[in-house]
Amino acid sequence: MTTPLLGQMMDVPLTVSSLIAHAARHFGDTEIVSRRIEGDVHRYTWRDCERRAKQLAQALIALGVQPGERVGTLAWNGYRHLEAYYGPTGFGAVCHTINPRLFPEQIAFIINHADDSYVLFDMTFAPLVDGLAPHCPKVRGWIALGDEACIAEHLSSMKTPVLSYETLLAAQDGEYTWPQLDERAASYLCYTSGTTGNPKGALYSHRSTVLHAYGASLPDAMGLSGRDAVLPVVPMFHVNAWGIPHATALTGAKLVFPGKDLDGKSLFELMEAERVTYSAGVPTVWLGLLNYVKEAGQRFSTLQRTVIGGSACPPAMLRTFEDVYNVEVIHAWGMTEMSPLGTLAKLTWEQSQRPPEAQRKLREKQGHVIYGVDMKIVGEDGRDLPWDGVAFGDLHVRGPWVIDRYFRKDDSPLINGWFPTGDVATIDRDGFLQITDRSKDVIKSGGEWISSIDIENVAIAHPAVAEAACIACSHPKWTERPLLVVVRRPDMNVARDELIAFYDGKVAKWWIPDDVAFVDELPHTATGKLQKLKLRELFRDYVLPSALAVDNCPLTDEETDKPRANPAPR
Ligand code: ADP
Image 1 (cartoon, helix red, strand yellow):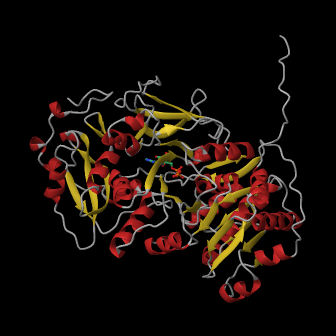
Image 2 (image 1 turned 135 degrees about the vertical axis):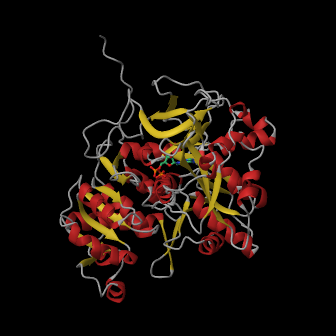
Image 3 (image 1 turned 30 degrees about the horizontal axis):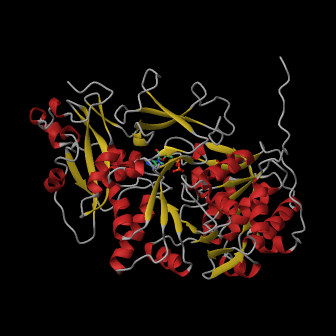
């Protein structure tokens, strides 16, 4: 074996502190604007942010936090949360963002599992912290994100002793040099939302965080730029706000943080006031924003692009943003275990020469992988399925920002070096991924799969439908049949038969829901996704009319207009 000829380039570790140092040094005057819990709007710059992140690092070190220890956060999107992203990680501790919308028992589980040393919290979460503290005895201190005056005003009835974040910072001078860390050291800890069982931890590294930030910023990925003013609606407690706090530091973009008010009016007003060009969030949030803008007869004067992900973006939403408001939608797919970005629906030059409707169809899918991530779909036998846009199977991924294993779990989740996502998908000839379901949400009718996402997308396109979920109901002949559960728009009416007729010609006849149930609201998870597990429980005893009259079942085999990898029901 000959020794390889090594390259002669600097071995600069890819660390999170290099991102904030870069932003402070090269985009030092660029603004970070936050709507605060205190009620006002706070402004400072990337330079100020780095200085305060250093003060936080000094304060945590003074409290005895060691490199490798976890520091938890329970906070909205705001500048202090951003400092908590960079302060602990800068000296080798781990920033553990906690989703406050989870059940308190799950939060306590997460804090204990992560072994958080200190937890930083926004004052709105004081009652939550009081409930958690007795169950989290190993937490050495709870740090309220505010000054003494604010704490005296808002937290006087708290049972738990708290420290003031501002007092801790004020005791430090910010004269601190970020240490050189191993790029493979842990940076952030994020837990999956745990819709089944206990949440699992994804422990990112400095290297994976920086590579993800590079990948996310690429023009054909999120396409962030120093020309953008970015308002992340996706919470910083949800997979690092999809990497936006890092990608904006890398590109020198302006950041605008909405705080706790995520209703349509609050978001719209902040977007207009701060001349926001770019935003990102889950479909539920955009539903609220679009409703507000429509009712108020408003237009976006600066917003150009928005990333939609976390759940499938309904085609009707994409069309409304683009055709009515001239805002480009970038549909994205990912997951906590992937830091989170995997694919984004951006077109190549060749694809953008196709007829407009063909382009739209492609962009409604979840898109193409970013360099760094690879993907494949496999059948039940584990063999690769063709990329024909028709065959669907389990989606597996791999790459430098995909987990290798879960935090504090010994067994590897990987299959032959690939991470099984739990999603079911097709991939077409263009390499565009389309998620058809979470594997546990798939509806199996007569041994054949029905995509609940496709069924929901059709319903949402109906003008009287505000939100829709499609779940499996048990059926004596076909094992499962789809039931559509619908929330109507206020002051609008639509009947069951009209909605069922609305499916004619839009999906294969045997995909059409057997029945429609109308409800006032649908259950959502802590991250704003439809909680299908809960919905299935609520409708567990529901009897479909077709189940009562099996002989009149509206299914016929020859109506399969979409050929599938599985055999058609017989
Ligand atoms: P995230 O925190 O990014 O939402 P989670 O780990 O909570 O990640 O959930 C990831 C899952 O969300 C994915 O496996 C997939 O089922 C679903 N998901 C994310 N983005 C999309 C999308 N654009 N379309 C359909 N499903 C999506």
